[in-house]
Length: 138
Image 1: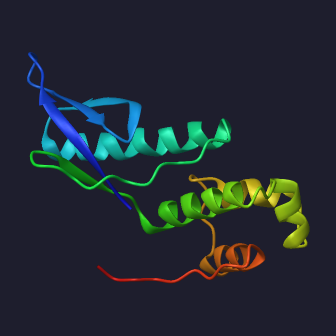
Image 2 (image 1 turned 90 degrees about the horizontal axis):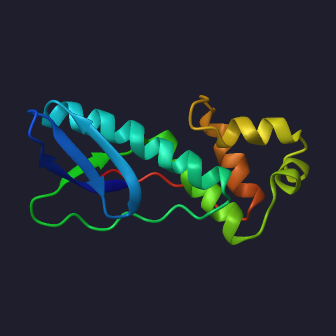
Image 3 (image 1 turned 180 degrees about the horizontal axis):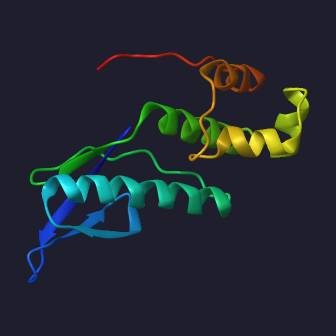
């Protein structure tokens, strides 16, 4: 899960960051490295906004010439995939908690991008949706 962004030089020596997949994403940085770090933070904020609004998080569009790529950490990408699968299957947090024999608060933690969730827990959540989590090295 890697999102393409454009970095546009600003008049004050910084760069403006935009993302085609998230029109609301705007950030800035003083260098390309700083932009990609700030861009990841802004991207994760967009993910959380979409989750709060119960909107599907869009897949990443392929990078075009002149674009930089923000690499989303695996654990964040996994939680986004889980969230999108729950939406696709119309499975609420309460239903997911029931399937996992837990409480809704535990589902909130599983989906929280700021909470460190064990891989086994994420695998169990996908299994509760009839899916299997697989890892591929690129």
